[in-house]
Length: 286
Ligand SMILES: C[S@@+](CC[C@H](N)C(=O)[O-])C[C@H]1O[C@@H](n2cnc3c(N)ncnc32)[C@H](O)[C@@H]1O
Image 1 (cartoon, helix red, strand yellow):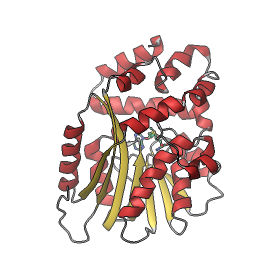
Image 2 (cartoon, protein in one colour):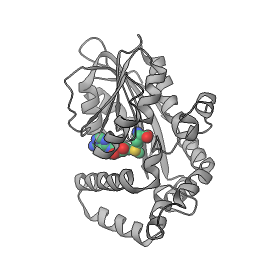
Image 3 (cartoon, helix red, strand yellow):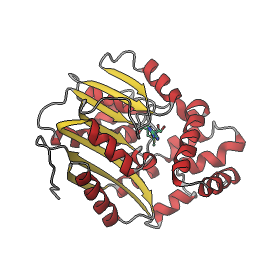
């Protein structure tokens, strides 16, 4: 593990949980401002195998595995929606790749991205000028700048783990219209699948949602990391030397702690689909 990365972990562990999340948000500021990853459309682990649409359609074909993770969620969202959604929200929209894909998959809908990182919002806005149905707002997913029940569908890739599940559910449930659908992916270390299934069931119920799907996608995510090594290596080779070890860890490259966690079966990635019943009170379907 690089010295810089070790120092970051040591510092981060000393902070209380809420401060750890803020610390992580600051790391994202540096990432989106200075790292070669700022030129990408996505910043997630990916899902293998990449589907044909994401492999063949620019700009998704530059990061087909990352686009496929979004596309998989959007397909599940579409299956779970009773009617085609008019307004969708991507929570933790990063550099805007997911909003672009959402606009392609739901061409008649408005797609809004919300992101805590101001740099990412600025980049996404300028890149998606060619998509009139897309827009971006800066905001913290723990207290989002939108009125209640403003969205038919909410999707999110890789952000809920940073936001915190309790806060993520509370805000997503508040923003969903009755009859709306929410889908997200998240990843954790040393977490048991069954515990997380129960936690998600309980949070869905507490927030008036019905949990329809809870799916372990760890093998797909780990396969994507393996397949993506050459692309990640090319990016990391452009990182200035003192930060290269740090970037290797951040990119979950072979030989890093995160990669080892996957090899040891200590890592868990999953996705969840929930709906908000049309009537006031939800019950749990699982
Ligand atoms: C793993 S990245 C995923 C980015 C994007 N969803 C993608 O897949 O390309 C997680 C994102 O969540 C954002 N994020 C973290 N905490 C957040 C918060 N409290 N509110 C909004 N966004 C947040 C980060 O800034 C980052 O862009």
